[in-house]
Length: 135
Image (tube, rainbow, N blue to C red; front, side):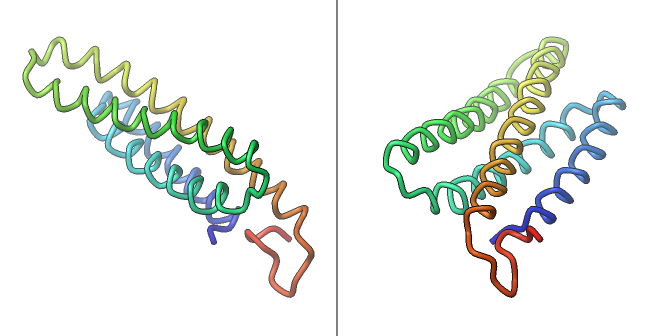
């Protein structure tokens, strides 16, 4: 189980590295980093959030929400593949748009996961070792 502290540390590191790459206008590095983090967040959302939702309606809503980010991953990878065959001048603008898309997607999915983990942790009975790293 990913703890809230681990997730928070992941996002702090991501935010710093992503900001550095964007400030250097190294969009390839920013996109690569954002894709890696978004893939990790989708995995956490699927395995650790969706896995504990019991209500079928809520589970279906959460599944649809997470699916949107999986589609963002597929879209981004498809655009990157297509950009191999276009002029670098055109590719630069497209990569800039991908950076914006990925930045908002990572932020949104992170907020969803954090909120869900906090709610789940608050509903769980306390144990010797708190669930999700919440004390």
